[in-house]
Length: 200
Image (cartoon, rainbow, N blue to C red; front, side, top):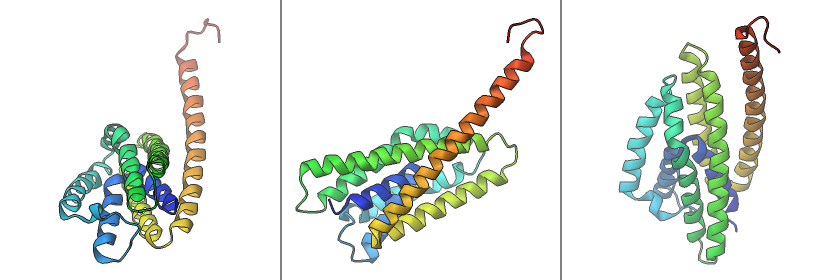
């Protein structure tokens, strides 16, 4: 289970931008001697497809409301990518068993699902602002966070996993407070629209 920290880190990152995770891991496999990274991610065809899809996401993720539509489409893709990367990490170690693959796939997929839901919820809240600057800035921060964390995780998987856990927890807490604010605003809006004689 030595690959567990990398599976957790890559799972969190996959929930934010799965294609960038594949690119970073694949390039790391190409240019460096990292035994933890599965060789299949460094194949030229895999890198080409991941690069093309990342280019599409790079643009879509910075346009208000288009980003939320892209997030909705990615609800199945990102957790699946996290699970597949986790399973590949387990299969890359000869001593790992099929149970290890199931565990790492579950960790990668589950973490990716949580981080994806966090990202999608926060971006949906950001879309209530009419200006695109916030969207663009947040998207760039997300890309840099994924790039930095995955690159760091290749060399220091345990430290990166700890950082990913903290960021995931903070994101979930932020999403909780955003949901409370939205719910409170919705109740106020409904209260204003209710007839004067209606029961509260």
